[in-house]
Image (tube, rainbow, N blue to C red; front, side):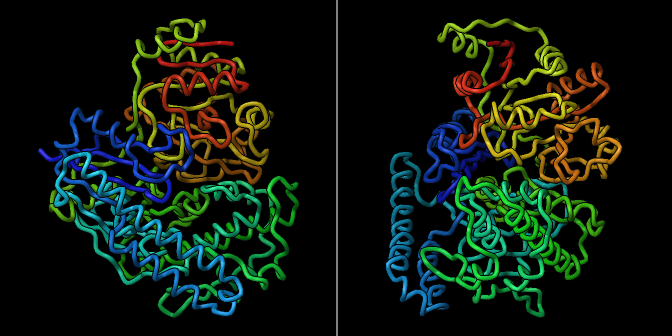
Length: 568
């Protein structure tokens, strides 16, 4: 028997995953335990959870697979130095920022080595059990080895990982092979999107999805000008037009960019049409680049199955555009496509490519985190003296509550792995109400008014409400809602007529499926509004205590937690 522990996301979104003979046993992000969003560092709490879920201790681990090469941490230092030389005049003018950046890179390299040494010392594991793999290799592995495909192309796009920003792969059987599509930092379409995110006044890690939502309110009036930011070569590799970029700690926009596109929006400044149009233009530009790269891989290989990974693969609008253009037979995007998913990819790559083990695992659900039984939940409710009722069928009772117009917290089963809530730690509401989005944004989520919510749809009714008929269990595709259905579910239809689709299949999520089915019986609508069970700036809830605290500090009407319901 072999236990392979995967570790990912050291710089941000730290995570751990545990496989037993190639089967996923547990996976979780460190942020869910520390309550610090996008928590980086060594994921000790996530590792402890995974080992506990597997019923083993550290000494039982057969191999530890890490998502970045130790040697490449030194390369990041030299990559930073080389990149700064591309604009030497600006670097000298801002030498303080340049020196700070180099010091930060060097410090991170030393810190990583110290953390790693301490992990092995405390666990008693010999260092020969540790295996470090290239960052993009782990991204590609997390997508391909989790997919149902026996043969597929894989496109990985992120800001930077081990010096790479874009890579192409072929997955066949239990092997991954790298293709000639490779872009090196700083030439990164994902980094450009990140810079635009900050330009639009969203400075926090992971705020790119806000630009995705804002883009629906604008028009791509700046598209032609944005295309000048990137130069494509004859082999479909690309490079940034450095006239628009400069270097100070990290790549940012130059004076020329600001002259053409105007000043950055301050955090909290009212959102004008200008910034909405910039968001729409950036989104369309991003979609064009991703489509061009994906079609290039298809042309080079003749393969029509596509896997996407890297932080850019969380762009649901881009994924949806690829899906409907008809160029690919099937597209798979794992729920943890960003750095947090590299813990899975590192372990899977070790098991399949290095150990030469056959594939017999497909990622069909996303519930790999902690679960709490009713006794544990009841003790937590009693500890705070809360009033609650027992319910024989939480799904039925919750559906009836939502049908009455209540907004509920839904805390059931094992926690999701990834940034999207998929019916285990969710806030649910009636999508038929036109004002429900504003109510949730203002009184529960406390976030920007332009942010949309997702529709969870019974799998057999996807074609009745959307312009596709496909499995989409991980909420990784934004699709158009049919015109004739938009007035029926206005609470989950974005301003541009789209919705971030989650299909719910009975065999994969029986409890959540039963809830939506009961809501369908009561209302004639097989759709519920689903958003993550958290407040703005916080991770999704993990424990019963997290759920109770979030419930009582927001405007939710009821909390369905295990076999109990709590009301205010």
